[in-house]
Length: 193
Image (cartoon, rainbow, N blue to C red; front, side):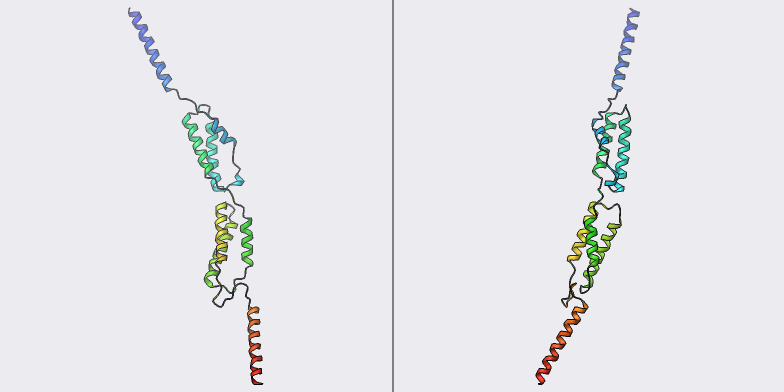
């Protein structure tokens, strides 16, 4: 009987140890989604350097988790979440063609005849637009804001109180004054005659 009790105790102890070992097992994570995200690696030349650097850090971490054969569900899930967040925060580098054309047109515009206040606002918007053009990491949003501001400032140019705007030139005003003087002179001669 003692031998039977000892055997029963040994079997029970082995069963408990086996139960503890089974409960300590951690399920490996399903890497299907993670593998898909890794396969769709984004190109650095399409995105701003700052946002791409954040993405690349998350991407490298995701690759490390994917390469770990013992990666847990929690580790895989965290890598998927981090990589998706980095992808969502990527900012595309913008096309500066329209902004460059607007800046070139603005530089060619004569500001003679406009109020000092509206000229200052226009020149500030032009300077900001030129800064965006010079910034190699400008996003689509940066470019759109600069273009909209430049267009609004151009539309906001206000002619001086004398009515002369950018279409007036000093030679045109001089010619107009000369014509008025001549007309007055001719009228005075007719009155004297």
